[in-house]
Length: 470
Picture 1 (cartoon, rainbow, N blue to C red):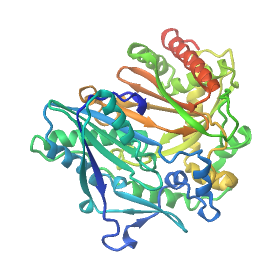
Picture 2: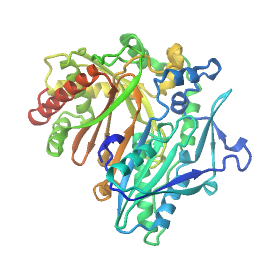
Picture 3: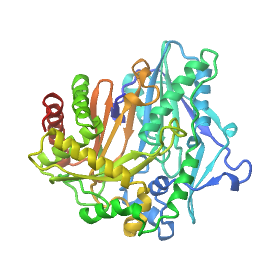
Picture 4: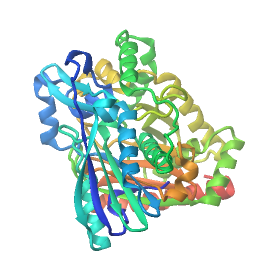
Protein backbone atom coordinates (compact mmCIF):
# COMPACT_ATOMS: atom_id res chain seq x y z
CA UNK A 1 0.00 0.00 0.00
CA UNK A 2 1.51 3.27 -1.14
CA UNK A 3 1.72 6.21 1.28
CA UNK A 4 1.16 9.46 -0.58
CA UNK A 5 0.37 13.11 0.13
CA UNK A 6 -3.35 13.84 0.17
CA UNK A 7 -2.82 16.17 -2.80
CA UNK A 8 -2.17 13.09 -4.99
CA UNK A 9 -5.59 11.60 -4.27
CA UNK A 10 -7.29 10.31 -7.42
CA UNK A 11 -11.01 9.60 -7.18
CA UNK A 12 -13.79 9.15 -9.72
CA UNK A 13 -16.89 11.36 -9.42
CA UNK A 14 -20.02 10.10 -7.72
CA UNK A 15 -22.50 10.91 -4.97
CA UNK A 16 -20.79 12.12 -1.79
CA UNK A 17 -21.93 11.07 1.68
CA UNK A 18 -20.28 11.78 5.03
CA UNK A 19 -20.81 10.19 8.43
CA UNK A 20 -20.33 12.21 11.61
CA UNK A 21 -19.52 10.54 14.92
CA UNK A 22 -21.77 11.47 17.83
CA UNK A 23 -20.65 10.44 21.30
CA UNK A 24 -22.29 10.61 24.73
CA UNK A 25 -19.30 11.16 27.00
CA UNK A 26 -19.93 11.00 30.72
CA UNK A 27 -23.26 9.20 30.30
CA UNK A 28 -22.65 7.25 33.51
CA UNK A 29 -21.20 10.21 35.43
CA UNK A 30 -18.13 12.28 34.55
CA UNK A 31 -15.53 10.73 36.82
CA UNK A 32 -15.52 7.09 35.61
CA UNK A 33 -15.12 8.27 32.01
CA UNK A 34 -12.40 10.91 32.49
CA UNK A 35 -8.84 9.84 31.73
CA UNK A 36 -5.36 11.20 31.20
CA UNK A 37 -4.06 11.16 27.62
CA UNK A 38 -0.88 9.42 26.56
CA UNK A 39 2.38 11.36 26.76
CA UNK A 40 2.43 11.73 22.97
CA UNK A 41 -1.12 13.07 22.93
CA UNK A 42 -0.42 15.52 25.71
CA UNK A 43 2.71 16.81 23.98
CA UNK A 44 1.06 17.01 20.56
CA UNK A 45 -2.00 18.79 21.89
CA UNK A 46 0.26 21.44 23.40
CA UNK A 47 -0.92 21.11 27.00
CA UNK A 48 2.27 19.91 28.63
CA UNK A 49 2.56 23.06 30.77
CA UNK A 50 -0.76 24.87 30.42
CA UNK A 51 -0.14 27.11 33.41
CA UNK A 52 2.46 29.21 31.56
CA UNK A 53 0.51 29.53 28.34
CA UNK A 54 2.69 27.12 26.38
CA UNK A 55 -0.24 25.65 24.51
CA UNK A 56 -1.34 29.01 23.14
CA UNK A 57 2.27 29.94 22.31
CA UNK A 58 2.62 26.78 20.25
CA UNK A 59 -0.58 27.53 18.33
CA UNK A 60 0.54 31.10 17.61
CA UNK A 61 3.99 30.00 16.52
CA UNK A 62 2.50 27.62 14.00
CA UNK A 63 5.37 25.14 14.30
CA UNK A 64 3.15 22.21 15.18
CA UNK A 65 0.15 22.16 12.83
CA UNK A 66 -3.26 21.52 14.32
CA UNK A 67 -4.36 19.44 11.35
CA UNK A 68 -1.71 16.73 10.93
CA UNK A 69 -3.64 13.67 9.85
CA UNK A 70 -3.48 10.21 8.32
CA UNK A 71 -6.07 9.09 5.80
CA UNK A 72 -7.00 6.01 3.82
CA UNK A 73 -9.16 4.97 0.89
CA UNK A 74 -10.33 1.68 -0.57
CA UNK A 75 -12.72 0.55 -3.28
CA UNK A 76 -15.92 -1.49 -3.03
CA UNK A 77 -16.77 -3.18 -6.32
CA UNK A 78 -20.34 -3.52 -7.49
CA UNK A 79 -23.46 -1.84 -6.14
CA UNK A 80 -23.04 -0.56 -2.61
CA UNK A 81 -24.92 -2.10 0.31
CA UNK A 82 -25.21 1.21 2.16
CA UNK A 83 -26.68 -0.18 5.42
CA UNK A 84 -23.77 -2.65 5.53
CA UNK A 85 -21.23 0.15 5.04
CA UNK A 86 -22.82 2.29 7.73
CA UNK A 87 -22.80 -0.70 10.07
CA UNK A 88 -19.13 -1.39 9.23
CA UNK A 89 -18.14 2.21 9.97
CA UNK A 90 -20.05 2.14 13.27
CA UNK A 91 -18.48 -1.23 14.12
CA UNK A 92 -15.01 0.30 13.67
CA UNK A 93 -15.73 3.30 15.91
CA UNK A 94 -17.24 1.11 18.61
CA UNK A 95 -14.37 -1.40 18.34
CA UNK A 96 -11.56 1.13 18.82
CA UNK A 97 -11.68 3.07 22.08
CA UNK A 98 -9.55 5.96 20.88
CA UNK A 99 -12.06 6.75 18.09
CA UNK A 100 -14.71 7.30 20.78
CA UNK A 101 -12.63 9.81 22.73
CA UNK A 102 -13.24 13.53 23.21
CA UNK A 103 -10.23 15.67 24.19
CA UNK A 104 -10.38 18.96 26.04
CA UNK A 105 -7.91 21.35 27.70
CA UNK A 106 -8.43 22.26 31.33
CA UNK A 107 -6.39 24.11 33.98
CA UNK A 108 -4.99 20.74 35.02
CA UNK A 109 -3.93 19.74 31.51
CA UNK A 110 -5.42 17.73 28.69
CA UNK A 111 -8.22 15.35 29.67
CA UNK A 112 -9.99 12.61 27.76
CA UNK A 113 -13.56 11.39 27.99
CA UNK A 114 -14.54 8.19 26.26
CA UNK A 115 -18.03 7.02 25.34
CA UNK A 116 -19.22 3.51 25.89
CA UNK A 117 -19.55 1.64 22.56
CA UNK A 118 -23.35 1.54 22.76
CA UNK A 119 -23.47 5.33 23.18
CA UNK A 120 -21.84 6.05 19.82
CA UNK A 121 -24.05 6.94 16.86
CA UNK A 122 -23.34 7.93 13.26
CA UNK A 123 -25.14 10.74 11.47
CA UNK A 124 -25.13 10.59 7.66
CA UNK A 125 -24.77 13.88 5.78
CA UNK A 126 -25.63 13.91 2.07
CA UNK A 127 -23.29 16.18 0.10
CA UNK A 128 -24.84 15.46 -3.29
CA UNK A 129 -23.32 14.58 -6.64
CA UNK A 130 -19.80 15.48 -7.71
CA UNK A 131 -19.86 16.00 -11.45
CA UNK A 132 -16.18 15.65 -12.35
CA UNK A 133 -13.03 13.94 -11.15
CA UNK A 134 -11.55 17.34 -10.29
CA UNK A 135 -14.58 18.30 -8.22
CA UNK A 136 -14.59 14.91 -6.46
CA UNK A 137 -10.89 15.08 -5.67
CA UNK A 138 -11.12 18.64 -4.34
CA UNK A 139 -14.10 17.75 -2.15
CA UNK A 140 -12.54 14.59 -0.68
CA UNK A 141 -9.16 16.24 -0.05
CA UNK A 142 -10.91 19.13 1.69
CA UNK A 143 -13.09 16.75 3.71
CA UNK A 144 -10.14 14.61 4.82
CA UNK A 145 -8.45 17.79 6.06
CA UNK A 146 -11.28 18.72 8.44
CA UNK A 147 -9.84 16.94 11.47
CA UNK A 148 -8.72 19.35 14.19
CA UNK A 149 -6.29 18.44 16.95
CA UNK A 150 -7.69 20.84 19.54
CA UNK A 151 -11.40 20.92 18.80
CA UNK A 152 -12.20 17.82 16.81
CA UNK A 153 -13.49 16.03 14.90
CA UNK A 154 -10.69 13.51 15.33
CA UNK A 155 -12.12 10.89 12.96
CA UNK A 156 -14.05 11.60 9.76
CA UNK A 157 -15.57 9.11 7.32
CA UNK A 158 -17.22 9.31 3.93
CA UNK A 159 -17.90 7.59 0.63
CA UNK A 160 -18.13 8.49 -3.04
CA UNK A 161 -20.96 6.27 -4.28
CA UNK A 162 -21.38 5.23 -7.91
CA UNK A 163 -23.63 2.74 -9.65
CA UNK A 164 -21.03 -0.03 -9.84
CA UNK A 165 -18.34 1.03 -7.37
CA UNK A 166 -17.77 3.07 -4.21
CA UNK A 167 -14.68 4.74 -2.79
CA UNK A 168 -14.61 4.72 1.01
CA UNK A 169 -12.44 7.43 2.53
CA UNK A 170 -11.58 8.37 6.11
CA UNK A 171 -9.05 10.37 8.12
CA UNK A 172 -7.76 10.42 11.68
CA UNK A 173 -6.07 13.33 13.36
CA UNK A 174 -2.55 12.44 14.48
CA UNK A 175 -3.74 12.96 18.06
CA UNK A 176 -5.51 9.59 17.94
CA UNK A 177 -3.48 7.51 15.54
CA UNK A 178 -0.16 6.56 14.03
CA UNK A 179 0.53 5.31 10.50
CA UNK A 180 0.22 1.64 11.43
CA UNK A 181 -3.17 2.26 13.06
CA UNK A 182 -4.60 3.65 9.84
CA UNK A 183 -3.90 0.37 8.07
CA UNK A 184 -5.81 -1.36 10.88
CA UNK A 185 -8.77 1.00 10.50
CA UNK A 186 -8.84 0.33 6.74
CA UNK A 187 -8.70 -3.42 7.24
CA UNK A 188 -11.40 -3.37 9.91
CA UNK A 189 -13.88 -1.34 7.82
CA UNK A 190 -13.28 -3.32 4.64
CA UNK A 191 -13.42 -6.68 6.43
CA UNK A 192 -16.54 -5.75 8.39
CA UNK A 193 -18.28 -4.53 5.23
CA UNK A 194 -17.52 -7.79 3.41
CA UNK A 195 -19.03 -9.78 6.27
CA UNK A 196 -22.06 -7.58 6.91
CA UNK A 197 -22.97 -7.29 3.22
CA UNK A 198 -23.01 -11.11 3.15
CA UNK A 199 -25.24 -11.40 6.20
CA UNK A 200 -22.47 -12.37 8.60
CA UNK A 201 -21.10 -10.74 11.74
CA UNK A 202 -17.52 -9.37 11.46
CA UNK A 203 -14.89 -11.76 12.80
CA UNK A 204 -11.84 -9.70 13.77
CA UNK A 205 -9.13 -10.30 16.39
CA UNK A 206 -9.55 -8.69 19.79
CA UNK A 207 -8.29 -5.10 20.04
CA UNK A 208 -7.08 -3.84 23.42
CA UNK A 209 -7.90 -0.29 24.48
CA UNK A 210 -5.38 2.48 23.89
CA UNK A 211 -6.18 4.13 27.22
CA UNK A 212 -5.06 0.99 29.05
CA UNK A 213 -1.78 1.21 27.17
CA UNK A 214 -1.42 4.89 28.15
CA UNK A 215 -2.14 4.20 31.81
CA UNK A 216 0.44 1.43 31.92
CA UNK A 217 3.00 3.69 30.22
CA UNK A 218 2.41 6.36 32.85
CA UNK A 219 2.60 3.84 35.68
CA UNK A 220 6.01 2.62 34.54
CA UNK A 221 7.34 6.14 33.98
CA UNK A 222 6.16 7.45 37.36
CA UNK A 223 9.07 5.80 39.20
CA UNK A 224 11.79 7.14 36.86
CA UNK A 225 13.95 10.02 38.04
CA UNK A 226 16.62 12.05 36.24
CA UNK A 227 19.41 9.81 37.58
CA UNK A 228 17.76 6.53 36.56
CA UNK A 229 20.05 4.15 34.67
CA UNK A 230 17.34 3.64 32.05
CA UNK A 231 18.19 7.13 30.78
CA UNK A 232 21.88 6.36 30.18
CA UNK A 233 21.46 5.86 26.43
CA UNK A 234 19.67 9.19 26.12
CA UNK A 235 22.18 10.95 28.38
CA UNK A 236 25.08 9.84 26.20
CA UNK A 237 23.28 10.81 23.01
CA UNK A 238 22.38 14.26 24.35
CA UNK A 239 25.98 14.86 25.43
CA UNK A 240 27.43 13.88 22.05
CA UNK A 241 24.70 15.59 20.03
CA UNK A 242 24.48 18.78 22.08
CA UNK A 243 20.80 18.20 22.86
CA UNK A 244 17.96 15.72 22.31
CA UNK A 245 17.09 16.88 18.78
CA UNK A 246 19.59 15.83 16.08
CA UNK A 247 19.71 18.47 13.37
CA UNK A 248 18.81 17.73 9.79
CA UNK A 249 22.29 18.19 8.33
CA UNK A 250 21.52 19.75 4.93
CA UNK A 251 20.55 23.29 3.99
CA UNK A 252 16.79 23.91 3.81
CA UNK A 253 16.98 27.68 3.31
CA UNK A 254 15.19 28.50 6.57
CA UNK A 255 16.16 29.95 9.93
CA UNK A 256 16.19 27.51 12.88
CA UNK A 257 12.79 27.33 14.53
CA UNK A 258 10.95 29.09 11.71
CA UNK A 259 7.96 27.29 10.27
CA UNK A 260 6.31 27.60 6.88
CA UNK A 261 3.97 25.67 4.55
CA UNK A 262 5.04 22.12 3.79
CA UNK A 263 5.73 20.24 0.56
CA UNK A 264 4.64 16.59 0.68
CA UNK A 265 5.79 14.16 -2.03
CA UNK A 266 6.30 10.44 -2.60
CA UNK A 267 9.13 8.96 -4.70
CA UNK A 268 9.82 5.34 -5.58
CA UNK A 269 13.39 4.37 -4.63
CA UNK A 270 13.48 0.67 -5.56
CA UNK A 271 11.17 -1.50 -7.62
CA UNK A 272 9.96 -4.89 -6.47
CA UNK A 273 12.98 -6.87 -7.70
CA UNK A 274 15.57 -4.46 -6.31
CA UNK A 275 13.74 -4.39 -2.97
CA UNK A 276 13.93 -8.18 -2.83
CA UNK A 277 17.62 -8.06 -3.72
CA UNK A 278 18.30 -5.52 -0.97
CA UNK A 279 16.48 -7.72 1.52
CA UNK A 280 18.60 -10.73 0.55
CA UNK A 281 21.85 -8.78 0.94
CA UNK A 282 20.77 -7.37 4.32
CA UNK A 283 19.75 -10.82 5.56
CA UNK A 284 23.14 -12.17 4.55
CA UNK A 285 24.84 -9.83 7.01
CA UNK A 286 22.32 -10.37 9.81
CA UNK A 287 20.12 -7.34 9.27
CA UNK A 288 16.70 -6.44 7.91
CA UNK A 289 15.59 -4.07 5.19
CA UNK A 290 14.71 -1.38 7.74
CA UNK A 291 18.35 -1.41 8.89
CA UNK A 292 19.58 -1.31 5.30
CA UNK A 293 17.31 1.66 4.58
CA UNK A 294 18.58 3.46 7.69
CA UNK A 295 22.18 2.87 6.60
CA UNK A 296 21.36 4.09 3.09
CA UNK A 297 19.89 7.34 4.42
CA UNK A 298 22.94 7.94 6.62
CA UNK A 299 25.33 7.30 3.73
CA UNK A 300 23.30 9.47 1.35
CA UNK A 301 23.18 12.41 3.74
CA UNK A 302 26.96 12.18 4.12
CA UNK A 303 27.39 12.13 0.35
CA UNK A 304 25.28 15.27 0.16
CA UNK A 305 27.50 17.08 2.66
CA UNK A 306 26.28 15.75 5.99
CA UNK A 307 28.42 14.49 8.89
CA UNK A 308 30.29 11.21 9.13
CA UNK A 309 28.23 10.23 12.18
CA UNK A 310 24.55 9.78 11.43
CA UNK A 311 22.22 10.88 14.22
CA UNK A 312 18.44 10.76 13.91
CA UNK A 313 15.19 10.32 15.81
CA UNK A 314 13.39 7.11 14.89
CA UNK A 315 9.74 6.26 15.70
CA UNK A 316 9.55 2.75 17.16
CA UNK A 317 6.28 0.90 17.73
CA UNK A 318 5.16 0.10 21.29
CA UNK A 319 1.99 -1.90 20.56
CA UNK A 320 3.69 -5.30 20.82
CA UNK A 321 2.52 -8.50 19.17
CA UNK A 322 -0.33 -9.53 21.45
CA UNK A 323 -2.95 -7.47 23.33
CA UNK A 324 -2.64 -4.34 21.15
CA UNK A 325 -1.51 -5.89 17.87
CA UNK A 326 -4.86 -4.98 16.25
CA UNK A 327 -5.55 -1.78 18.21
CA UNK A 328 -5.79 1.78 16.98
CA UNK A 329 -3.95 4.59 18.76
CA UNK A 330 -0.60 6.36 18.91
CA UNK A 331 1.64 3.40 19.76
CA UNK A 332 4.98 5.11 19.09
CA UNK A 333 8.06 6.12 21.03
CA UNK A 334 10.78 8.34 19.57
CA UNK A 335 14.30 7.01 20.07
CA UNK A 336 17.76 8.33 19.14
CA UNK A 337 20.07 6.40 16.84
CA UNK A 338 23.69 7.17 15.91
CA UNK A 339 26.34 5.30 13.90
CA UNK A 340 29.39 6.13 11.74
CA UNK A 341 29.02 6.60 7.99
CA UNK A 342 32.58 7.63 7.16
CA UNK A 343 33.94 6.94 3.69
CA UNK A 344 35.70 3.62 3.28
CA UNK A 345 33.67 0.90 5.06
CA UNK A 346 32.04 -1.65 2.79
CA UNK A 347 28.40 -2.72 2.65
CA UNK A 348 28.66 -5.28 5.44
CA UNK A 349 30.43 -2.85 7.80
CA UNK A 350 28.00 -0.01 7.12
CA UNK A 351 24.88 -2.13 7.57
CA UNK A 352 26.38 -3.81 10.65
CA UNK A 353 27.02 -0.38 12.20
CA UNK A 354 23.39 0.61 11.60
CA UNK A 355 22.20 -2.76 12.92
CA UNK A 356 24.23 -2.49 16.14
CA UNK A 357 23.12 1.11 16.64
CA UNK A 358 19.49 0.08 16.21
CA UNK A 359 19.91 -2.65 18.80
CA UNK A 360 21.42 -0.18 21.28
CA UNK A 361 18.63 2.26 20.49
CA UNK A 362 15.85 -0.20 21.29
CA UNK A 363 17.53 -1.59 24.42
CA UNK A 364 18.30 1.86 25.79
CA UNK A 365 15.13 3.65 24.75
CA UNK A 366 12.34 2.22 26.87
CA UNK A 367 11.49 5.54 28.55
CA UNK A 368 8.83 7.63 26.73
CA UNK A 369 10.34 10.47 24.72
CA UNK A 370 8.25 13.12 26.46
CA UNK A 371 9.41 11.86 29.86
CA UNK A 372 13.04 12.02 28.68
CA UNK A 373 12.58 15.66 27.72
CA UNK A 374 11.00 16.53 31.07
CA UNK A 375 13.71 14.81 33.07
CA UNK A 376 16.85 15.64 31.07
CA UNK A 377 16.00 18.82 29.14
CA UNK A 378 13.01 20.40 30.92
CA UNK A 379 13.55 23.70 29.11
CA UNK A 380 12.54 21.93 25.87
CA UNK A 381 9.71 19.76 27.20
CA UNK A 382 6.86 22.18 26.44
CA UNK A 383 8.16 23.70 23.23
CA UNK A 384 7.84 22.74 19.56
CA UNK A 385 10.94 21.19 18.07
CA UNK A 386 13.49 24.02 18.03
CA UNK A 387 15.00 23.36 14.59
CA UNK A 388 14.87 21.04 11.60
CA UNK A 389 15.28 17.55 13.07
CA UNK A 390 16.81 14.53 11.34
CA UNK A 391 13.88 12.11 11.38
CA UNK A 392 13.77 8.62 9.84
CA UNK A 393 10.85 6.19 9.72
CA UNK A 394 10.40 2.81 8.02
CA UNK A 395 7.30 0.64 7.73
CA UNK A 396 6.58 -2.52 5.73
CA UNK A 397 2.94 -2.29 4.64
CA UNK A 398 3.10 -5.88 3.38
CA UNK A 399 3.04 -7.05 7.01
CA UNK A 400 0.03 -5.10 8.31
CA UNK A 401 -3.44 -6.62 8.84
CA UNK A 402 -5.25 -7.04 5.53
CA UNK A 403 -2.12 -6.61 3.39
CA UNK A 404 -3.06 -9.58 1.20
CA UNK A 405 -6.21 -7.73 0.10
CA UNK A 406 -4.63 -4.31 -0.50
CA UNK A 407 -4.39 -4.78 -4.27
CA UNK A 408 -7.96 -6.02 -4.55
CA UNK A 409 -9.22 -3.18 -2.37
CA UNK A 410 -7.02 -0.64 -4.23
CA UNK A 411 -6.01 0.51 -0.76
CA UNK A 412 -4.11 3.79 -0.39
CA UNK A 413 -2.71 5.69 2.59
CA UNK A 414 -2.35 9.46 2.68
CA UNK A 415 -0.60 11.97 4.90
CA UNK A 416 -1.54 15.60 5.42
CA UNK A 417 0.91 17.96 7.13
CA UNK A 418 0.13 21.58 6.24
CA UNK A 419 3.25 23.17 7.73
CA UNK A 420 6.60 22.23 9.21
CA UNK A 421 9.99 23.59 10.22
CA UNK A 422 12.24 20.92 8.70
CA UNK A 423 12.32 17.75 6.60
CA UNK A 424 10.94 14.33 7.54
CA UNK A 425 11.67 11.04 5.80
CA UNK A 426 9.12 8.20 5.88
CA UNK A 427 10.37 5.16 3.98
CA UNK A 428 7.84 2.41 3.38
CA UNK A 429 7.80 -0.86 1.51
CA UNK A 430 4.82 -2.06 -0.48
CA UNK A 431 4.34 -5.04 -2.76
CA UNK A 432 5.63 -2.82 -5.59
CA UNK A 433 8.90 -1.71 -3.99
CA UNK A 434 10.40 0.76 -1.52
CA UNK A 435 9.21 4.36 -1.49
CA UNK A 436 9.99 7.64 0.25
CA UNK A 437 7.24 9.92 1.51
CA UNK A 438 8.95 13.17 2.48
CA UNK A 439 7.66 16.38 4.00
CA UNK A 440 9.77 19.55 4.01
CA UNK A 441 9.55 23.30 4.23
CA UNK A 442 8.46 25.00 1.03
CA UNK A 443 11.58 26.95 0.10
CA UNK A 444 13.57 26.89 -3.16
CA UNK A 445 16.62 25.57 -1.31
CA UNK A 446 14.64 22.80 0.39
CA UNK A 447 13.26 21.69 -2.96
CA UNK A 448 16.77 21.50 -4.40
CA UNK A 449 18.06 19.70 -1.31
CA UNK A 450 15.26 17.17 -1.42
CA UNK A 451 15.67 16.48 -5.14
CA UNK A 452 19.41 15.92 -4.76
CA UNK A 453 18.92 13.71 -1.71
CA UNK A 454 16.33 11.54 -3.45
CA UNK A 455 18.68 11.04 -6.40
CA UNK A 456 21.61 10.11 -4.16
CA UNK A 457 19.45 7.87 -1.96
CA UNK A 458 18.06 6.05 -5.00
CA UNK A 459 21.54 5.41 -6.42
CA UNK A 460 22.85 4.33 -3.03
CA UNK A 461 20.06 1.84 -2.49
CA UNK A 462 20.41 0.51 -6.05
CA UNK A 463 24.14 -0.03 -5.47
CA UNK A 464 23.38 -1.81 -2.20
CA UNK A 465 20.76 -4.04 -3.84
CA UNK A 466 22.53 -4.82 -7.10
CA UNK A 467 26.19 -4.85 -6.15
CA UNK A 468 26.39 -5.03 -2.36
CA UNK A 469 28.29 -1.73 -2.20
CA UNK A 470 27.66 1.66 -0.65
